[in-house]
Image 1 (cartoon, rainbow, N blue to C red):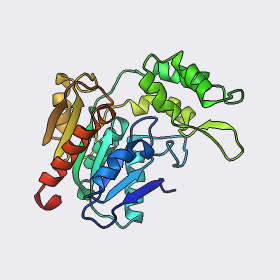
Image 2 (image 1 turned 60 degrees about the vertical axis):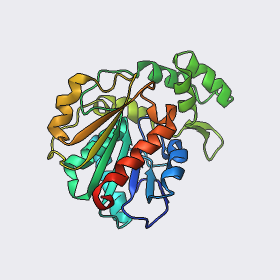
Image 3 (image 1 turned 135 degrees about the vertical axis):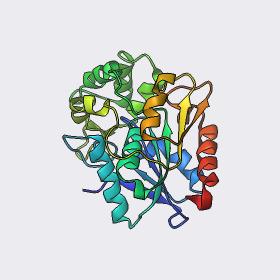
Length: 261
């Protein structure tokens, strides 16, 4: 099965593939994509178990990278730039290690190639507390999430994936059971393959704890040419907190590459 995707400005040079993070979807990036598509061919996709893509019981990084490659081959694209945020950032790292011949460059947004300790317990509790059989409105769903999750921005982000299915019942667009069952895999380190020697831009939210000084060695082992830029006064959701700066940094990086590749 192919991933759900959208294309913008088709044929305008080497495409930029935009990959969302955990619980996200391609729709979350629409405002950024519209700006990048003024000068770039953009492919925005939903990973397995997210958005409008297919659901599956498993979702390792190799599987997710293979899904992306299958889509690109379907589109007859042999080379691309890849941008990934959080979980999507690990997917693009996996692409660099295992499909380097298809990778022109990587942009990794606020994630390191390490094993992370669990940090989504409150989110899982809130999502599981939303009883779809008795749910009456999105507002009610948001109130339930807020009783478990302190950050209102995360609640608003999650509720975007609540929709009514073909029979009119509320449902999540993401496959919550699969995400919970595969959480240790999603939290795992990126390893194996061959170090990616191409250009890499790593963008870190200055207030985020996802990338720390002690992670430098892990980056160096698999992405020896990675360049780190810190976006001050923002956290893990750096692209949403400072969208203008984020868009400019990504555009500047890609445009700085020799012959656009």
